[in-house]
Image (cartoon, rainbow, N blue to C red; front, side, top):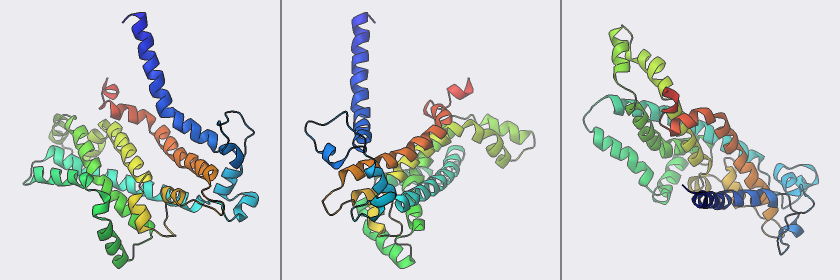
Length: 282
């Protein structure tokens, strides 16, 4: 590639980066603006930082007594509990189901895999009323347990299909050799196969966590006060003077931080998972 081609590629990459990172940067910038600076035209890039938005979000100082304060601590805790528990259980069941579908042939296997995949095709609005009535009858409405169950149902199919692909990439001879040497299949699965697909588990957990963390449709219908998650809380943010945009931006930054922390913790395994373990088996 000549010099002009390289500059063209770099320019396109720069535009793509600004397109993706620009809104996040503007969200972060706006979260430190006062209400007056927020609506100033043209928009200000340099201003005196105002932390009133974060004070209202976390209920610090005089902001906690304001009628327009958008407190998110309870909703943040709900989101963390629901997302972590739902992701962990969905990946657990998806890993087991993916291994079975990868290693064993059974009657109706194709139909089962299609049914599992079809759970991702179903629009949430098609089952919202069913979930609402069922959870109300079981006493799970407006509870964290109910949202965890919804997260599991929504993500276990995705986890099953992804993990099946990773298990397909592990030679069956690994388990056969272990069984010939006197070990059980469970030992071979836990000690030999799982370490080889830990990157896939991390990648699956990443996808499931994003879906669980950003879940809005079910959380907005199945919760009212006690189990309301952060996306639902932010969407309903308003005060005596209208929509509190500065507080919404601050809450949006808070919404992004746990996702960044989660992906930072799994970054090494995630790289291996996204490359289907090629880098980890060199």
